[in-house]
Length: 140
Image (tube, rainbow, N blue to C red; front, side):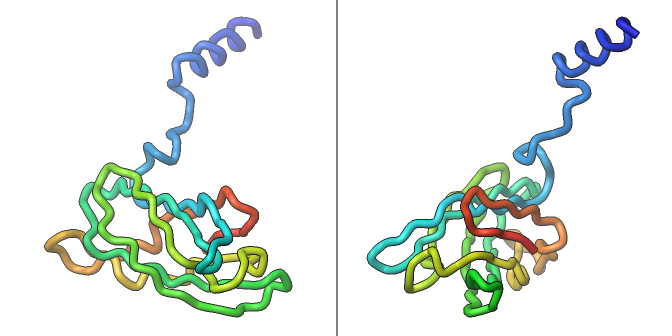
C-alpha cells in the first residue's frame, strides 16, 4: 500500500497524471472576467483564448441577457475579431446601458460568425468553453 501511495505522489509531483489546463487545451475559451459600472453603463471584459491552430478574422457572439428573476431582457451581438492563434485576447464592450446589477445571467446563444483567414465559415460554438469570474452566471 505504501508503494502505491508513493507512486501516486510521484506521478502527481512530476505532472504525468495531471490534466491539461484550459490554456493548454485545443479550441476556444471565453471567460467573462470583469463587469464594471461606468458612465456609458455596464462594461464587460472578456478573455478569449484561441488554440484552434489559426487566426480568426471573424468572430461574433450572440448573447442573451437575463435579469435577477431569470427573465430575458436583452440580446446583443458583439464582434471580437481578430483573434490571433496561440494568444489570449482581452476585449471590453458595453453590456447594458444601466448598471451591472440588472444582469444575473448571460447565455451564449450562438457564434454566428467564425472564420479563419482565407477560409470558409467554421462551427466555433460546439468547441467553445465558457466560464465567469464575476457574479454573473455565463454559460451555453
